[in-house]
Image (cartoon, rainbow, N blue to C red; front, side, top):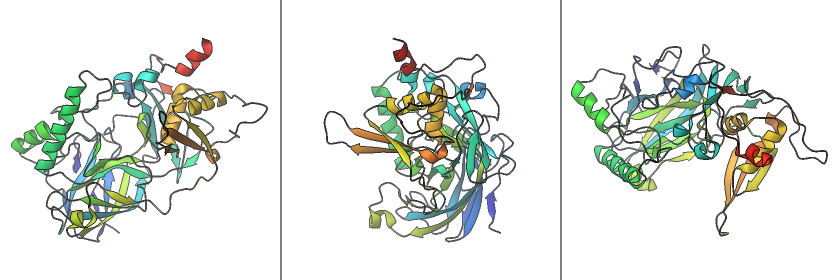
Length: 402
């Protein structure tokens, strides 16, 4: 049995549980130390810390406290790791808890709504996904079943004080350049919601709360990369900035489409991660390791038959899913959660870059291809909405009515 270094109860809120953190700061002490090449396990709670529940309304998504997120497990010190080294992390396995065999995908209200918040004037919605082994299906998006590409949305090392100061200065300048932006262009340190699940002095905690970087974006150390192919079986090289490296991991996703388009857009879950770490001395210099490098998993599910939409905007694939019978909320959630492939095909042909989005045909229980007789429209119900019934604005439906 490989040791469980941090145990988490997925049925309880994150607040009060040991071994969790929701800020990046060099003064956060390690909760455990591992030897190189030892295999170990870490429990992880879903990114909001238990704020989202398995229900048929999205009031919890509408009322989520984003000052708390993300709840990460760690930091873990690796023996022999020093600043300038490369930390090599093998993601050996990720399993959901048997007592919590479900996850969710969400759409936030417009002020926190992410990529398409203004275009869709987003209102809170969610889909609950039930897990059966490696497969997921949802009562809120019928007609879909797929194998998950399970991965940590966040994996990274602690920053040095110098790097932390660089982040805060860089992101403050971005905020100052875009006052009042909604959604915000960056999130500065905030004391409200700061959580460090271990016994530390008030002086150290207050310093972390004042200075600690929020976990929303990816940065030089790794962090919130949300790359679906950095999954079970992957190996990642991370820069080391502090003694011991300070590895932290969390924001587990059962599955995700490229781009995580609804912001709360993967299938968020709690689970157990199995890892192994080693160190390459002076790896930052040897590999020119300014940001992480990773090898994709050799065991991700392969969906070879894909219906690919080419274009310069988001409209074609949304309208196709609506033709099948899905609502704007269901389409948005599905494209965030399913193993969708998104690519930039070409950037050289001004003024328009060519982008593609590919839907795996095999995840549907019906034929979704264009055919001469048109596309059969079915009634797929609706995602879980706010109890007041408010919906996202549907620009495609509005155009159809004009």
